[in-house]
Image: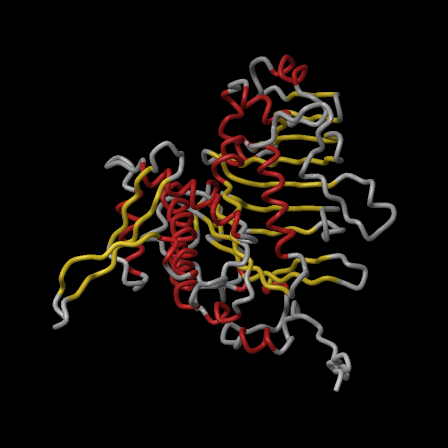
Length: 414
C-alpha cells in the first residue's frame, strides 16, 4: 500500500510536494472504510485530485508512471540511454540542469519501507532504501553515485550487484533481476503493486485493452477474473449480458465479442446477439478497459492511479467504481485508488473525507503546488464542496480572464 509520495524538481513541481494517504485524526472524518496497516496505522483507500488544466494533476500521476517504468520496464538501460524519470522544472534557470527527486513511503508484505531517489538524465545521483523493523528506521542500502553503503540487515551478494549496476540503472531493479530475495517484495511493489493508468490517447487505450483481453482469456476457476468481470459489467446497466474472447489465427491479438439480449417482435426474449467491442459506444469501450483494470486492482490489492477518470463515463458510474474501493466488504485486499478528474459531482459523494480530496494549483512562475482539503481551515463537514469548488472558494480552478473577445473573419469578396 502507498503511504506517501513526494516529488521535487519534476516537470511543473519545482518545490517538494507530498501526496499522503495516511489518514488524519480529525474526529469529524468518518473512520469507516479505512485500510489497516501494521502498528495501528490507518490508511486511506483513495485520493481524488482536482485542478485547472495544466495545473499539475497529470504531471503528478506521470511521476508515478515515470518512476515505475524506469524501475520495472526500462531497468536495463544501455550506456547512452537517458533516465526517463528525470524531467527537471524548466522555468527556472538554476533548476533546468538539476536532478529530479522522488521519495516513496509504502507497505510491502506488511513492512514499512522508504525509497529515495535523485536522478539526472544521465545518472543516479542518490538512491536509498530504508525499512522499519520494530518501528525504528534502519538502512538497507544507500548509494551516492557509484559509492555504496549497506546496512547490517541486508544479506547476500550486495556488493557484487553494485558492481553490475550502471550509473543510469537502479540498484533496486538490478538486485531484483538477479533474484535478490530480500528486495523482491520492494521491487514487486513498484512493478506489480503500482498501476498508473493514462488515457491520453487511443493508442494507450488499445495497449491496455490488449493486456486485459489476454489476461481475461487466461482466467481460470482458480483466478475467476473473467466471471467476476462479467458480473461487474452487468451491474453497469449497459445491456451487456456476456462477452467472449477468442484469439485471432496467426496473430497475437484477441477479439472481444459483446452479447446483448435479442427479442422477438412481441417483446419476448429470442436469445442473444453478439457484435465486436469496437462497435460499442465510446463510453462502453472505456468502461470495459477501466472496469477491468480497477477490478484487477481490487482482486490483487494494488494501488491504481487513473488520469482523466471522468472521460466517457457517466457520473453515477464513476461514483459506483469509487465506492468499490471504499467498501470493506468488497475491498478485502486493501487496494487503493488515486484519480485525477474534473468531475466536480464526485465532491458531493459522502464517501470522501477531507484528507482524501486534493487540489493542484500553478503559480505565475509555472510551479505547481499540491494540498489537501483538510489543510484548509473553516470547512465544516456539511459544506457544499462542489458549489464551493466551482465558485473558486477552494482554489484550484482556472483563472479565466474576462476580456473583450471578438471573432474576426477575412473579408469576403462580393
